[in-house]
Amino acid sequence: MTHQLSGLGLGLRPEHYQDFLAQRQPLDWLEILSDNYLVPGGKPLYFLDALRQDYPMAMHGVALNIGSSDELDWDYLSSIKQLANRVEPAIISDHLCWTGVNAHRIHDLLPLPYNEETIRHVASRIAQVQDFLGRELVVENLSSYLQAQAPLKEWEFVSAIAQEAQCGLLVDINNIYVSSENHGFDPLQYVNALPSDRIRQIHLAGHIDDGMYCIDTHDQPICNDVWNLYAYAVQRWGSIPTMIERDDNIPPLEELLLELHQANRILQKQELMHDIA
Image 1 (cartoon, helix red, strand yellow):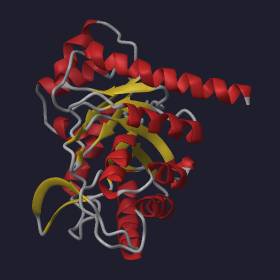
Image 2 (image 1 turned 120 degrees about the horizontal axis):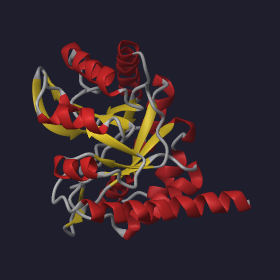
Image 3 (image 1 turned 90 degrees about the vertical axis):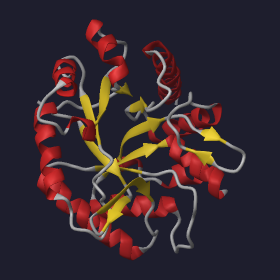
């Protein structure tokens, strides 16, 4: 049975498997990196099968390559569909990007041209994926470091994709902040432009700022500016299921739970203000 997401979650990482097996942790759901579990057996699936009994799950991938001109990888999508049948996730997501062309994989999440032709191309491919999976695909905005001249702003492009493809959005608040610092736009304008009825999930993460660029590293605590942007976003959109991503320099689970508690305080404040209004 597929569950619906609500409340707060964490990205499941092997460093915390034993913590989750030892006792029920104070969170509502877990997100897995889909590509780490596309295997016929072994420890990853053993822990996943055990933990999905206690926590609703979301699946998050990095290799769909939805923006490429290559044919969709149907073998990869078949593996994702098989994993989804096993996990029964509330959400299946990937990134609004391209990761390779001419069968060459670059192993990076690369931004797309923000124009009408790309919107039509990507929306058509998302529709094919949704038909194949038999469910909605949720796509995530990127962080970026170079910006080409384009007729559309990123937030206009992302919004148009969601509306044209009738897909969901996973909004990474840290990615909005990182790109706003790198390119000099107002992150509030980005948040204001997104269609709230399409937003299914929020990611929070940390980054580094070397003075020239902000880099989305997922290896640091969430900074105050990102917390403030998150507070603004939930004030505008309401209580969207939110999780914290940490992919390197992974701390003890207790540290991530403290950050999750901070997210919870922001959500509770938003709900209180809504009730008063």
